[in-house]
Length: 305
Image (cartoon, rainbow, N blue to C red; front, side):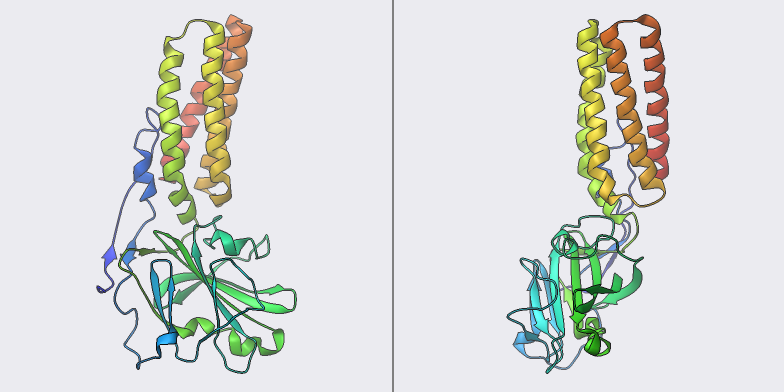
């Protein structure tokens, strides 16, 4: 394992024409990240073999007292690894990794087991890495807290859960993760728009391809029905991009970008309707709506870069 290394990957995203920069640049707009490698805190005394967990490409060194649990009374997630961190208590620590579902940065498989509305995250650390923490949350007869570390392969999450009577003893189970290492994965600094920027790359890349193709066709087509069809496809492409990015948008620039994508789709839908009617004044008005929507989209992309 190599030592933790600070890596900065600056980027920006714009559209072709309007989406000027490649969407591939957006995929790495996540901000500063660093290699997960080596020891993330001072060396600890030797621990037993069963105090090591492998979650995807991540290796976690755990306190020696952590014992694998056959069944966790807290959230149950396929692929999750449960441990009993405190002998004699029904407290559980659950490790989960995978793609995120929304701006919370919680892995999708775990997010489905949590309340629909989460409190604002608190800055935290896990194994020496920057993290977000949610909780305590109440689910049935237990309290739990979730700590997440975003990475280039999704997010790593640790859930600490226990009955209310033993919560004070179990709430600090994150301290039981001594280090997190990997030869393949980079950790990323958590932020409100990180999930959006990770998701935006492939979404805007697909939209870019459709825009280049359909806008070229639209400029060459003369038959009203053909123009309407091309504009309809552009409308659908923008609406799809907006829908795909909506779960990841946070208040501010990323939400404004989703709104601009949706508005551009509506403008192209109006253009398609005007082309089908083949009425000159309506067509001119609809074309103006598209130009204004495109300008607003360009501005929204610039603000969200």
